[in-house]
Length: 332
Image 1 (cartoon, rainbow, N blue to C red):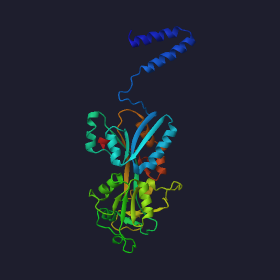
Image 2 (image 1 turned 45 degrees about the vertical axis):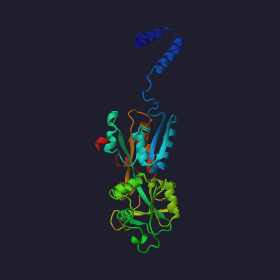
Image 3 (image 1 turned 135 degrees about the vertical axis):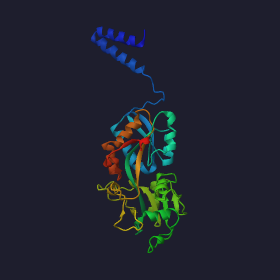
Image 4 (image 1 turned 135 degrees about the horizontal axis):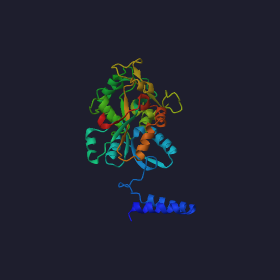
C-alpha cells in the first residue's frame, strides 16, 4: 500500500474508534509523520527563530552588534547567535566561503564577489541598516580639536607629519595616527574615501589590534590621533547622546579646506542625518542564505523597530529614520 493510501486508510479507522483510543493513535500518527519529514540536505536545522548560527561582524561594530544579539536572544530563547568579531576583510571572506551566512560590514558585494554566487543559484542580499560616523579622537591635553578632511588626507599620505604644520602654535611634535587593524573597514575607508585610492604613506601611521587599544593608546599619548567607530565612544548614561567617553576628546571635522568652528562637526546623529559630518559610512547586513533560516530572523530583528532603537541608542543613525530601504545587490 502506498504511503498516502496507508495514511488515509488509518485516518478512516481512527474516526470509528472510541475517543480515548482516537487521541492516543492520533498522537502516534503525528509523531510518525514528523519523523518521516525529509532532513535538509545541507544538514542545517535552524529556522527563522530557532537553532544556532554563526555570524561575522567588523570588530569596529562589536558593542552595537553584541547588544543586538543580547536583546534578540532574550526575546527568542530558542535561538543562539554566535558572533565572530574580526576584520572586515575576514568577515566577508568567511561569508563568501559559506562558513557563515551573515556578515556585518561597511560595503556591499563587489562585482567579482557576485560572480562567485552565479553557480549557487542564489542572489545574495545587502541590506543597509545604519549610518556610522568615523570619529577622530585626540588626547585630553590636546587643545587642537578642529581639523579638515584635506588635512586628514595630508597626514595619511605623508604630506604632513608634524602638529605645527597644521596648528602653528601647537607644542606637540610628530603626529602619530592610529587605526584599529590594518585590514579593518576604517583603513579601507581612509584609503578609498579620504585618500581617493592612494595608499597610506606615513611612517607615523600605525595599526593596532582593536578599537579599545586605539582609545587606550590615544588616552596615554598626547601626539596621537585615533580613528574609531563612534559606537565605541558613546556615553550610554547620557540620554541626549551628545557626550563621549571622558578619557579622550572627539575632533570636529570640516569638509572645507580650512576648519573653523562654524563649518566643523562632531559625529552626532543630527549631523549624520543632514550629511554635515563628512566622515560617514553605511552599515550593511550581507546575507548569503538561500533558506529562511536564523540568519534571516536576526537580520529581520535588526531592521525592526526594536533593533533600530538599539542602533539609535548607540549613537549611530538608524536607517529607519531615512526611510528604510532593502535592495537586491544587482539593483543598486
